[in-house]
Length: 157
Length: 157
Image 1 (cartoon, rainbow over the protein chains, first blue to last red):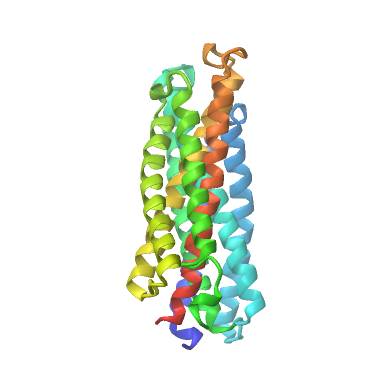
Image 2 (tube, chains in turn brown, purple; image 1 turned 90 degrees about the horizontal axis):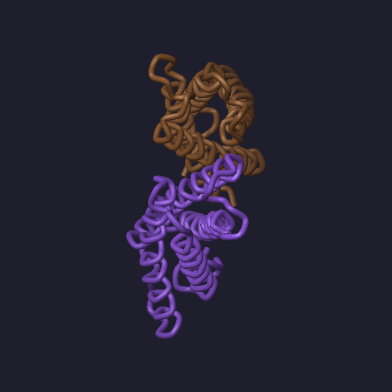
């Protein structure tokens, strides 16, 4: 099976769109979280910001590499590169899913507790919810990248 | 590549051990969670119990199937069965990871809040922490099963 036939593998337009989506959703998650009031009081929120700070440079670098390969038709299809991409994407997607579900459960608890942080006129909890949703989208795209590359890998071994 | 050479694929002893580990850790997580006091007040805890109630019958059934195949040497290596196993394991591992991280973040918040639920003499929060840890172990084993079967799949296509 030729590698270029698989959409979403590294160096294709679909891969570039996946990476751009990851960067977009991660930045949106980071912004929604940072615009909330005292996010630093909660471990889960700080953890999500840390993870997003890892996902954004990783996906942005790979988006640049994909764009370069589309323009100049350079071959990126080597077993070593694929393994690094699969492991990196997989680790980041696991971290993103953990961060997103932690944030979602904490926000749920805050809304139920009806404390001062979730006043209806400040939209703080709504921002946290949006941040968790964006992190879930970013997770699904990272997982897609990882699975597509993993699917390709056995054709090299 | 012959299927029987890959340890952990369906119908091997390694797969049976993976399944037994999943059943063990899921049951432990469910027990630790149920022994805690008012777990039904928190959405994340109820969610984790639901997920564990899905993982246990799934893994137990597959452990039985693996044991049967080891004893009677029946072939389970068909593309359709593998796809069902991969998707099922993957969905359950994602749900387990989400449940485990939600529980862990809620327990972290409860311990920080120093409320009446986390009194040191009742060990309630310690039980919740153990439950989250067991769920993480169960997640890692589910993910291993899914990845091993996914690695096998391209040799059929």
